[in-house]
Image (cartoon, rainbow, N blue to C red; front, side, top):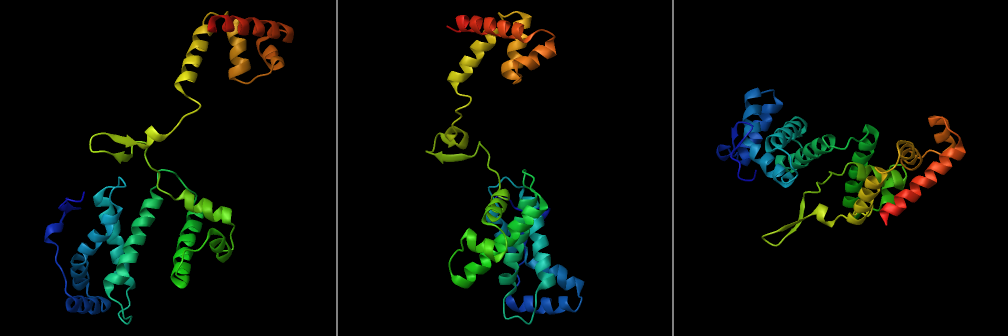
Length: 257
């Protein structure tokens, strides 16, 4: 993506560059409703969009999609920019473009999050940035919760909910030849090789049981039924279920040894 020249049909190597005087002139014409000036100004700031979306590369998103979303942020910045403020357009536009891209990435997260949680997360982020600028240091979860009249648990949950999920196939280390992936660092205590072998042995052993014994074992230990429930379901007494269950378990134990 970094070496891509054409994005959304736009040859990025030939994008125009506007000097400060030209930008000011076009902005004045735009405020007076000049559509040609608006189009020229947008084209003259597409390099700004490209520079912003580069920081979002590597997340598996399509470059064309990021570019289009960045352009939406650029247009919003143009529509809301105040010529009377003593600030350069790029200074005003960059946060708008970043915000638009971040919003897109959150809303297109593969894990669906409720709108209320997303809204709280956006408020938390804005509150965090505001307090950081005012105090010069990052606020705690408790401070943000108090500011938003929320609970620390809800604040923390909302931030976790909008995190971009990572793939188990993502590399965490490379020595130039072999990669170590996230899945290589994840331990599964439930499905270890030893337990897999044990389960396979039990499955093989159950094939030696009678149909009635097999049905009782499945209902008792795989479906979680009580002996009374199994008795009612298959139409025999609880005593018979108990006897057949013990016979089946003893048979499996002998084969398992």
